[in-house]
Image 1 (tube, helix red, strand yellow):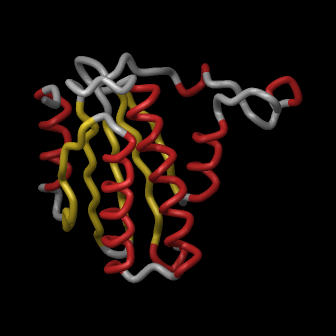
Image 2: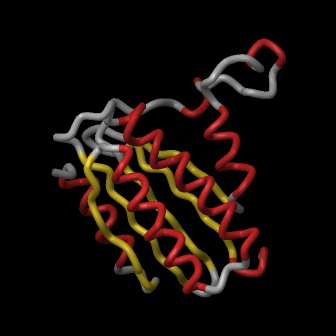
Length: 156
């Protein structure tokens, strides 16, 4: 079950005038990542994104979902990953929340620094930032992380 405050955050987000197209909990499995990614891409196609943008959205969303399952919830089937997707005025917003311990963005090593080139951590966040127009990370209460990914239709 998603903590009430996290759940309430997503519900409030859906009532701000935007069109919420997905508002769903998923189990912490890689199979769920596949399902969620497919639903995100279907919503992005319906929003009108071109093939290149769909690929970028897919890569960023998949990386974020895998991070939520693997690093956030640590494959704990009792913990859920919450996905919310909305589209308002060409602003396609994906919010992915987990129920893990959370992390500080600035503590993740920069994968472009020479000493980190061979490290595995940090690349996913780097890719999300590169593929999306906006990316932010926030702590959820009482625990967890919410990552917000935004892609603007038409590149605005």
